Amino acid sequence: MACRMVLALVLALFLATPAAARAPVPPPPDLTAALDAARTPAAISMARTNLRQVHGTEPTTISIADRGIPAYVLNPDFVRGVPGAPAGVLQYIAVTATAGSGDRVTLRASQDPTGAWGVDSAFSGNDEEVLSARLAPGSVLLNEPQINGWYELKPAGVVLLQASLPQSPVGTLIPLADYQTQVGTRYGETLSPKPPPAESSWTAPVVVTAAALLVAFVLFRRLRSA
Image (cartoon, rainbow, N blue to C red):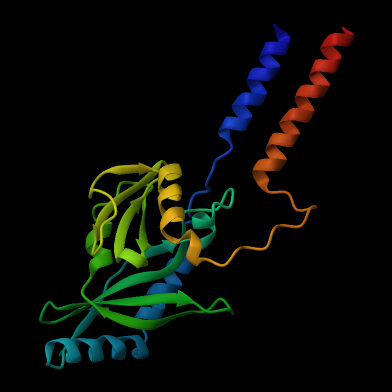
């Protein structure tokens, strides 16, 4: 009976090891820094230029939203099938700028190698803001650029929200393992192979599993001795 309990514990620990890690959420200081970057004169100038080019008029006033929306992009390591790789990696934080006329521009704030946040581009419209309103708690926006697609990335999988070249039905949940298979088939051959990890390098899931097996072995030996 005790042996069965030990084996059940090991199996539970093994199954609890995720196939893909969750996309890390930006900490509050980063979100604040992104908003600050969107409020700089340089960022507002980008918004003015975009509005002038798209709508043909110079905006009289521009207001900056009080929240940033993290936007993730499909992770090449996830496409390669690297164990534990999250489906998405943070690409930028979207901040909406609104002209007095009601026209909107999305400022994209990202982090440079030194850790400083700055706005490097402005895009017409506010897709990220609109799509984020459809996300369930705990979900994030994931972009698959090859199909110009946006997904809701959940812990259990992805749901396509919109795409120029949809590869799955809009609104249907695709489990992460199935999505990984799909993108691996679509893009795996276009990615350069990732160098194999050093023999001494252990990922977190391997460490957890090895530790569980060691505990099971010790308990089993003690039970047999008793």
